[in-house]
Amino acid sequence: LSDRIRARLTEAVQCFRGERQPAPHDTLLQGLLDDYPEGQERTAAAWRLAMAAEAMDDAAVFTIDAWCQRMLREHAFDSGNLFDEELAADEEQLRREAVQDYWRQQCYPLGGELLEAVLGVWSGLDALAQDMRGLLDQAVDPAAGQGSLADAVQAAQAERATALTDLAQGWGAQAQALRDWLDAQVAAPGAHWDGRKLAPRHYTGWLQSVIDWAAAPLDVELTLTDSARHRLSPEGLLEARKKGAPALAVPPGFEALQQLLADMARLPQLSTRLRLHAAARVLQRLAQLKRQQGTFGFADLLQRLDRALAGDNGAALRARIQAQYPVALIDEFQDTSPLQYGLFERIYRTAENDPQTALLLIGDPKQSIYGFRGADIYSYLQARTATAGRHYVLGTNYRSTQALVDAVNHWFGQAEQRGGAGAFMFRSEAGNPLPFVPVQAQGRKEVFHAAAGPVPALQLQVELDPLQTAKRAQRGFAARCAEQIVQWLNDPEAGFAAPGEALARLRPADIA
Image (spheres, one colour):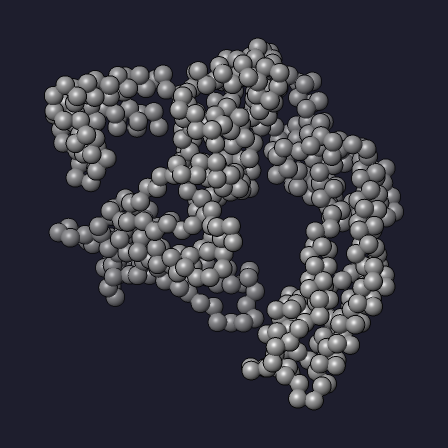
């Protein structure tokens, strides 16, 4: 990356000195030349660009982990970092040992119902180890590990039992009253209900399940299908009215039923309490093992710098880092984790927009693909809110064909304009923090051809078998893709045609 930046600066120097002309598509460089007319201004600008190119070795280009390591090392006194520790690039063995210690210490003593509850969350040691892979890189409150695993199970069960009992109060009689109201409505002469949408054989069973659950909330699980939930809502009931039916006041009990279901969905889960307990304890044990061996890992780098910035010497450390790096640019920002963004937020305080510093965040939320290693799209949205009014969009695609850009613009544009949550499902009454923005195309001029002529940039394949499972469908579509690729590779007319150039045959390397 340093070499590419240096080469770009050198190219700009040559253009400002009149030694070459910008490329036809290079509107940025041409615009800069126009802003600095020939003479003293352009000569001074050329000198500044040349100095920037020569000083590239002074510009720090790091991964976030490596940058944190450098800050801890260079500001060891302010950060409280030890001098004699060794960075362990691979912590897998230590993590496995910490998980094994937790399983042995916390699960071996369990029996009966307590053990069954734990095995309902993790079937065994391997399942616990797999679950901890994602959690150990997150910020977990150490207080979640207080007490034993048995204590955590009992506390979670008691909390849930109390909440269920409270929610069930009065719902036996209330559900019966709703059923009686529906019975009277459907049986009334000249009823204005669509029997296909509201039938006693359906709602009787739905409401009976509520009555049964209310009688024994700790022993009976309340399960309603999505269609049952919808039909028993005020909106669902009004949809079941015949066209032209007179206005109807739906009893408030149906709205209360929807609130009950929402409250039940928010009940504390046993798995959440146990997973947090395990993560907190495993992290504590992992820290002990690292201290014994005098090592630390990549995740520790971020956590240590974050703690140092929040500690007693945080103000001094922040001032020193700002003086050293008044400007920071983070590329692929959509792949940062909450901890990573929080760290830079502590240093640069994005919302304050201090003119003495600059934090530049470059990212595309549509390319957020690293959730499996801690990246969080909500960090991007948080930064987007903090920088409102200071957003810039790269509005031209230089990599793809016009046909592909048009297809993507059309496909996502349709979803964005449709009512609801927008193309990326983030739109709400408060606005859309993640809108789809169409772009222009000024990249590849060639068109992909096959024997039958130009190939559309986007094709929709539809599986018409209603009994197809997801796994079978995936295998079937993979086979179709493979078959299509083979056909194109064996087609002598398949390739890329550009105006005034010979056909470039399709190669295996062209296929992603």
